[in-house]
Length: 129
Image (cartoon, rainbow, N blue to C red; front, side):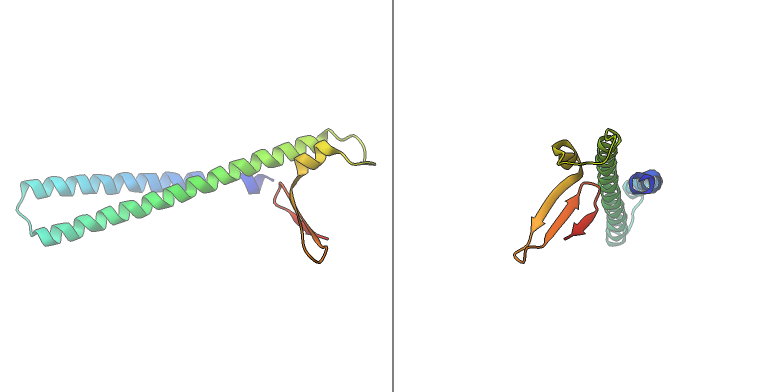
């Protein structure tokens, strides 16, 4: 379960991206300041400035993607934790249908035209019958 929900690698990547975003932001600020104080070819300036903006936006997209991945992992952790909690409450094998366990364990069941079933569990496991 730990590997499925561990966010350490995501946090490290996120931190590196945020640091790089700060660097790009500072480079952009300095470049704008230099342009305001020194006569420059504006076509070259705009080309370089746009490259910095594009770099920053790409980093921002990566950062948002990592944040989404982290949120998904944390949600999965909560689901798995709830599933484990329900399992820990069971002291013996099931001999009859347990509605609380069903609600805790099963996300959905798909019934196909040929009569086959696909059980999708909240922990991500799928079983075809």
